[in-house]
Amino acid sequence: MIRPADLIEQKRNGGEHSPDDLVELILAYARGEVPDYQMAAWCMAVYFRGLTATETDALTDAMVRSGETLDLGAALGRTVVDKHSTGGVGDKTSIAVGPIVAACGVPLGKMSGRGLGHTGGTLDKLESIPGYRVELTIEEFVAQLREVGMAIVGQTADLVPADKKLYALRDVTATVDVDPLIASSIMSKKLAAGADAVVLDVKVGDGAFLRTLEEGRALAEQMRQIGVRAGRAVTCLLTDMDQPLGRAVGNALEVDEARDTVRGDGPGDFTELVLDASARLLALSDLGIDVAEGRRKAEEAVANGSALDTYERWIRAQGGDPDPAALERAPIRRPVPAPRDGFVTRLGARAIGNVALELGAGRRTKTDEIDHAVGVLCFAKRGDTVLAGDDLAEVHARDDVSAETAVAGVLAAYELGDEAPPERGILLDVVA
Ligand code: URA
Image (cartoon, rainbow, N blue to C red):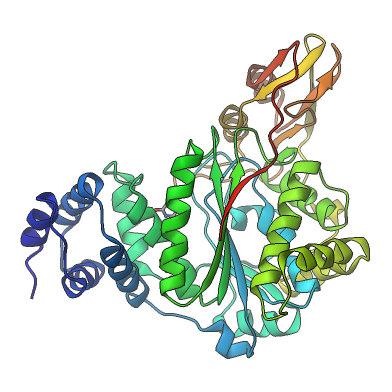
């Protein structure tokens, strides 16, 4: 039996744990046999000393083994794909990518979380659709994947319980931003959820927890390596999160925008990311095609309406009403006029996210209720030209007071200048 204090000391002194010791530590913690204070000390030692690739694999393996695991490929007799994002402002990518990929004949099964922050997680966004059930049994999840080709559900309580416990501890001990801990936390959930191939969207910039491309590349490489060593195909996209993704920030507004994109009427940056991620998922699937052919197929599914049809079948299969008119709308809509002529040189993602949070679109604590209807539509994005009085954005609010505050906040998030900013596409790099 390991002594946690010995492992803390070993890591504090820069030593390397044996895989067996590390697995035992994590499983003992998950069973409640190691107290939080010792685990917190270990996480802090890892913050300063890091983990080797072998240790990171052992940690990931232990997390996966702490709960139930699925093998979707075996259940369906097909390669099942999954997509994950490290999170950003206006990120509704999975809601559009899923139906496109499924319409191309590739099953996409995703277990999603809620999370704290400016808007809800994917589950909260989907819950703005009246009737949508996020909780399916494993049998229902697999059956829906077989019949409709896609499902997005809540993570079951039994999936990677060690991560749930460890993440909550890291959250309050300043040990969230530790690459090997983030990489194993994200990848253990992907591995346990049972897809064979994963596209990871690693967000970089002002509205993401990774601020620089170098930080993003390092984390992407670690996650990819964990996946590859576990026998999964993984492609990481590094994408821009200096400004919100697309126009919509806010749960129901984002669902509406994802649906628009599935039918070929989405904003440029979001459409580009959705088609690129879809193409790469198709290239990792059992269709035996490359990324260029995947892109062609994804574009075709949007153009011929099969992606929209799959979207509607998916939402109905999970009990929801896919009609956009069914989404709840906020009672107050306020335009945000441009104070001058010029180019949009900056649109702060974090600032817009905070406005959405203040409006009620997100939660600060786990128990906060989300207002699905409120949010912001950012019509003008970086590089656009505007004339004084043009609508830069539109605030969707529950009441006049919050609308006024939000209009001021959105205005402060925009910078207008006389020169166009350097062009920067949504896709910054690919680690494959
Ligand atoms: N998201 C996760 O799931 N885990 C982390 O550690 C960080 C972000």
